[in-house]
Length: 80
Length: 139
Image (cartoon, rainbow over all chains, first blue to last red; front, side, top):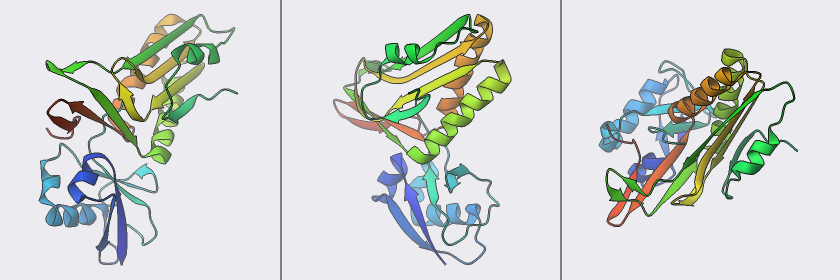
């Protein structure tokens, strides 16, 4: 299945785009998507953290992503 | 109309935020105003840029306000955050908390800004004379 991942902050700089489309197997988890991204873009490894949000909520690594989920890369936040 | 949880690219107005919060039952109103510092580790900062995943940021800000009310027995919580380019000295965030007693208001206000910095998907880029850096991105 195709998963579109939206990026903000430094994640956008690393992708050189505000989104990337990944071809993933069905039943892929958040951890699988993160691993795929790190494999494609090793610069993600240098970040202090890399969380993924699904449908505007933080989810755990074992969350299984569905095709139409809104998946967003959350690099270390720095508001305030 | 009271806008308690708000993200805007317009200049924030701390006085208007304070006036938004007024509860006759509350004897303590504590506010925190986070402004753009002119330096980081001695290097002059020219300006900041904030980027937000707005839909989720608003949700997370609302969660913080709801939690603050439960944890500290405060009556009302306002959190406004700026996005886009922000100049040195301008406000990046305004938090106002109203509680019947001051101690709860102080604690709740600190809880709100500390938690915001940990959970709300907003990112800050600092611009220096010789480049720009996403704050806290690297360990």
